Image (cartoon, rainbow, N blue to C red; front, side, top):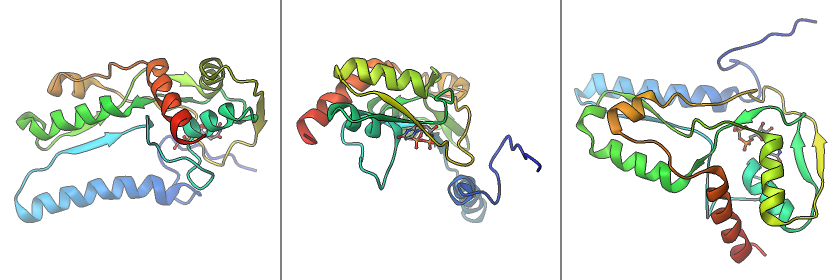
Length: 187
Ligand code: UDP
């Protein structure tokens, strides 16, 4: 049996409508530019979290899942062996980046990544959340979803050069604020 490895989106995998629609959206923006002779700015965002993030099984994002599980002393469900990485942006940093893009003339016609370039494994994230919540939960390992990206880390060169922007909130600081919000709003 062949194992096909795709560096970019797998065009007919279970995530493909999500992956490809993001790219299609960018192509539509560029087509609109040409058609109407205006210039746009394209922002690529990455894993974002903070207070008021949607939680629950229908959303399934890792940070709200782990915080919810930790606060009720339920097992934290790490998918795969937890060695896959993500880089998490605190929502306030991201909004500040967006505002800079909106006001920056030099960003016209550009595609700019807004994210965080500090990478964490999902297992590291689980352990940090256990520590910050003083939880008695354990970690359990579940099947890795098909086509789950092994690594995600944005290149922030353009955001730094064009916007003079980079994220300033550490993962721990952002998680503390998110956990405090969950305690007041979910319990
Ligand atoms: N994940 C996990 N446990 C969960 C939810 C997600 O281990 O309860 C993993 C998921 O497999 C992925 C990572 O955490 O590797 C980030 O998942 P999320 O759905 O938050 O974002 P995305 O996969 O779109 O980056």
